[in-house]
Image (cartoon, rainbow, N blue to C red; front, side):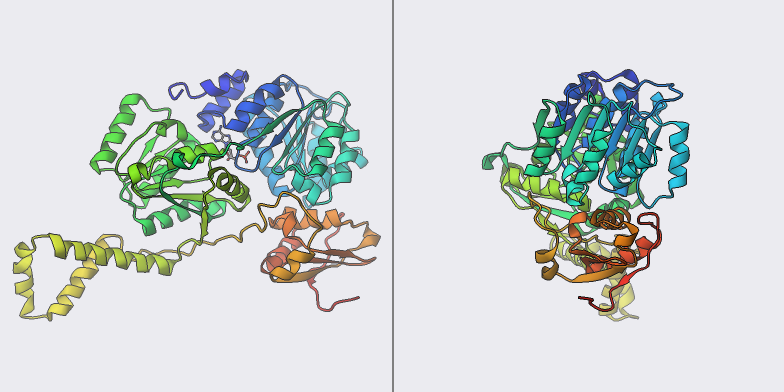
Length: 551
Ligand code: AMP
């Protein structure tokens, strides 16, 4: 397993160019969804997969798409079309396809509203193999006849529930109607409400069905562990990890990462912060790994940064903390990881860093284990300072209780003639505190707002109930029915551009010349700002807080 890093992927029947790309990226083994989805997709079957962000679903559909691409075509339309709900996802999926397909010279184009259409037209004219787009903009291109879908072999509906939530059902139907009937169709959705099922029944042929994380874990398989999670944007994840380690001050901890590349980056970052961290991954020989483990046991290393593969079967008495640098790709992997601490009745901590979008995965894990994962706020600079002073105090207390301090008396005696004993003590405390890191120049790390209602499996009518629960602001958009605006255009633009989730958007009212949209008050300013950069139905309308309530 660990000695042949891509053995797992090779076993799925993927071509050599793809396997090499995965090695470069440091993927050690397929995630459960990849293991189950790739073989039937490569064999050409349709598929319905229930999987949320963080499970590795992108590679699960992207690799089979790339597997059958015929390179070097000069003309012809795209061979694969991926529909996604937001601009952010369109970019992420395109990047993933590009990275996996690098050796194949794959041409992939993200298309979404708000981006100048000219650039997209140019790229389409030059020819692309894979289009990743939001339904509104894809339909736009079909209507302009700038995108022809007659050569499409595979259509992927990614985050289908989210797309329906945004009002894209009709657009999706219209787009599918433009693709060849014999195409392969793949649908991924975090939840499976009846509307998704109905799409699957009408548009997929005898699909393979995959559901992740159904099997509950029995309580005695679970260790005694305090479980918590922090929501943090990707850009701040490394800073957040450092902050959490500073506050938790673990005796010995293991930080889990997804890929070798990530292991190396995190190890370097932690060493840069003054920790003694060592990498452990499947690319290392058994000998190298044994040596790292030896140093952890002896206490000369305090942090291990590891992939799942490398940490399998690892048993270290001293471990107090397991930290997940990102949510593991399957709930089962989570259970396995936290089993590294809290052994033999000792208490341990399991801490998970999650992107707001990955909150669903945390819920899936809670369902599997029947245990709660407490969402906590990242420690502030004030918290950190208080904690450091507490650590200094504790170190002094332990020294007072256990050390033989007589040999330092000469220093004290030589100073007491000139200084007050209390002042000498304070100076000593300061030196100790600074030696331990002191109050290094720290910045606050922003915490994103949690995605509300991440656990609901059925989406109800938009808005109303939620709107009254928390602060809601109504935004005025200077564009309305006369410009052809539909609710999905507004939801698409807001969710796509500002990064808030479609389900946070409340009631929408469209009049001839303007529209009113309820959004979370906390997100209003960010949305107004984001709308300055984007267009809706080809225009850039005024967007501001509503000043009056027209009825
Ligand atoms: P997704 O659920 O598709 O959004 O993927 C979540 C993250 O997991 C992405 O950052 C991927 O690069 C990463 N990832 C996907 N598959 C694997 C794998 N087999 N091994 C390690 N990382 C992976």
